[in-house]
Length: 380
Image (cartoon, rainbow, N blue to C red; front, side, top):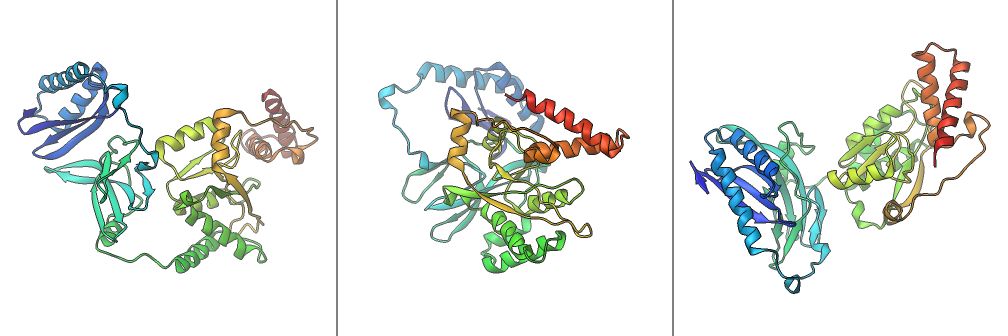
């Protein structure tokens, strides 16, 4: 359709849905994947377009979407005999992917569209022959062989406030051919930065900072391995764990920070956001989902140890779908006998009772232990 230069372009996806793009004077102003037969979908799409193009005819837009739905219903789906199974290695997530032909990274940007800010996703691609380019995110990338690399899921439009971790100037320099930093030099710089904020035992400090630095770098290319290590460390309150949280959050690729997240919630979040590194304050059913903050901060003279364990991502995902991790019962005599995640919960609860509730420390610890034991007993 055309309405004062406004055009709707549509591409069928699946389940009767379409990726619909509204263009004004050739520039995309809104894009979404909708079911045009769904009245709410149409209403939301028309409202979003009208907000960005005040002269748009809402009734005409709705009529065009209805026509699209009616045409699709008339044509119907392709017959089963005509369906061809695709190679799923040709389907990649948008946020970051690496293939033999091309490597890509998707970044939220805000551009000037006719004098108005317009948020959208841009892909930065590096081809196997060394070429670099940026292009607006689409549902597929045409490869030199003539085949296509499909993007799934295609995210909705980013918000105006969505901040890109890769700065505009760095992206410009990259497109102009800037060279990548020397990996060894980068590793040393990361180790130095970590050591600047954490106070570690002299005998283990080099190994600890190296482990953290290497793990942070691993989050940018962990897909190359079937199994990857995760970091698990615990410590009392006010020992610097939040500082380590902040350090790792700044270093890893697309971090997710949370506390006491269950395995199903973690999986759904990772799938919807494409998060690469999950930074968890404590675990419930989750086994080896990411990293737990480290204790030790300059000035507090706390000591720390870092445990590195093997974690098979395939087995973890299987456990989410096929079976619930078994529950191990233990006889608890005192706080030191609590499992690590429960000990952390007990310590935090006791501190709240002491500082916010005004209880003596000894009584706060006893009351907190009683509550934690009751909660443990209710676990299936």
